[in-house]
Image (cartoon, rainbow over all chains, first blue to last red; front, side, top):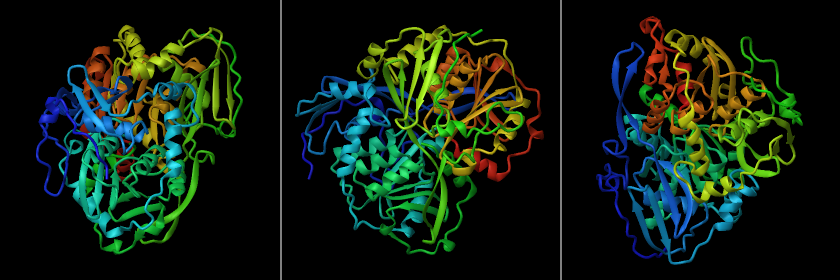
Length: 313
Length: 313
């Protein structure tokens, strides 16, 4: 098991607002957190004044020890999880690393992750923009090295009946998406139970926040599924494999490279999952067809819209 | 007017496949281009074999003269436009720059933009990941410097009747989205006419390709509108302002910072545009309410789904 030093997080108000999760969840969205949305005034199609709620978007600059790594755009609710998850998914932290602290400065929008091990990604950061093998540069290249080593559990199983129960629960969970829109959602699940539901405006921040949460709370990927509202691109597939979660499900579609990488890693890849329908394109051996899709109702229209609106992470 | 040397593009097959645009368009999507989609086999919810069409996703590494800038994930249909548009929107090229060539190497997935002016963004590239003011680092910081200087035309107008005609035309245009999904779309328009409709898997590549096309073909932003399927985030607003297009319309929602930046730049920002409805949150003086929304039909359901699925660029 993972062992690490105690974490000291300097809380921002957003952190202190965290409310109790919804029943069944370890962590659920907080659409009522006043720091995550703003009311703005404008006009509608008739020129009539109106006020709507929109999601916030804030910069967060990440340091690993004394080195500045990157600035991300985020809703800012879990800077500690986002920081750690980003570093893990970029292979700048490993599951064996011991953290000595996470400091968050609200005024400067800065989060600093401190490790027992001395770190220096000077070369990696330079190479990121200067010599790139493919995709997002050398950072991505390094990710791919580990990608080839990871063996996803071939004995993990996915029952199609779980999907229908999960989708219904997730769709009915109050969220920033339902409140203000323009946001992505990712959910770590176990069988029919959604456990950790993160949302974010930033591409892939939601998944990095889950990776960070799992690390900080010693949550194992064994027996887990990953559900996302976003597209199954190469980047999404790589992150799921990095997290060693063998089953990735999305309401949205696929890219060809996403499918190719999933097959290479033997990741079970299920997309276009809406109502009774889905398409599985990789890791088919893990799927147990234990329900009659014809007995599943189509989603009510407002949920179809909700679901569809979350396409294209 | 912009003046520049002739461009020599080493065509890849994808380029040579470009078909005639749809009537009315200068450039329209090419859902039948065999290089932009792949057929993949899998199973459906009943475990029955099926074959679906998915969008490709390829790396493209960009050099400006002899300096490697970045690697992007793209469908690969207009590497020349993507390269030039990216550089323009990052302020690494200006409208005054003279290009001496664009070389595209299909096997290496590399595009090289050559300029008369000597360029060196060594410091900028380093700072990108090492000292970032906000958002996406110093590149973004520099973009913001120019952002503050740009004066968008206050006399430009937007008639609400145009929106309804435009949306109908765009929704009925054959596209990769309708063919394979999991893709973003952006359209440069003039009054009720969609002119240039680009799609891409990569975030913001579609908008960069339009910026590059405008530069390479001397298309002025005067009198233009920009329509996107993606969310109105800070990045999207900044790119529209960089392109000096005063009106930005989306089917999707807003982020709070996107709204704030649009107000600062006096950009007309219209979102959640579906069927008869829309919300305008900035630059309201440009809007002419010349149609009765109640006379506009709601979109047919399959278009609502299509539209909604393109949320969250």
